[in-house]
Length: 322
Image (spheres, rainbow, N blue to C red):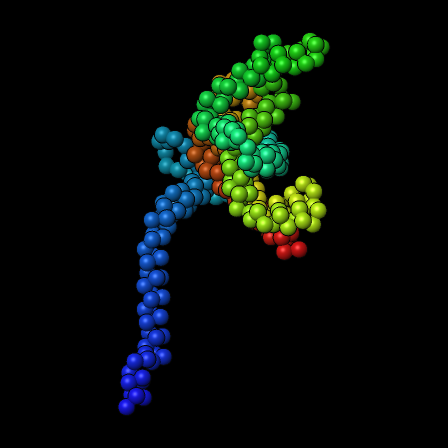
């Protein structure tokens, strides 16, 4: 009589599989429902505007245009590289954007890593310094531009000019940092690094605090010095975070706009040396009344950022595997 009792007490294999399938289906349904708001936001604010930008770039569309838009195909894209009236400023903005990114990405990431390592210490008042270096991130760009307008003022009383004259004993005269084509883009790069490095610093600092202390203790037992601990323990421990920071900084560098626009419009920065791709797009839209060209520049920038990001991910992944 014991065997039938045991047989009824233990569920059969098909019953367990059916319960597992029901649980899997319930979890899948719950996951889909929870992801619907995010998916809807991506479709509404990314997919739909991007498709609309592609469509607009194929037409000759102007704001408050009386006649119907004219289909021009890829003519807007071709003119960006071949039409002398358009290609000159566009290619200049493309070069400025690449120079900005090539300088900002390594310098800002390296400086953020250095600050994070220095601030990852248990010292009195360390929270004050963490807050101090993070404060520029929360400042609105208009306020940052006002501050740096005073710093980069062309008069001898400007903060940077007066500092240079003090350090050189007056041998170096006052310089128009924003008006000069040689230093306008460098000034915007300096402003951007100062304003954005705190954000990357906080991300890297969080990753540093997740590294187990036992790894550093083992390295010290192996008589590793501070540099060896940094190379063999710290950097591998935050490798994934560094990859994320590099990708994020790349995207933010190629979409630079606020700094250039505010300094050009309010501080008299050299427009030819300071304009970026997004600045060109907004200039085509609001100044030249050309929606089609602005859409073409925006689509080109989007595709460019996607390609560069995919190449970066591939290179970083190959290096990590090696």
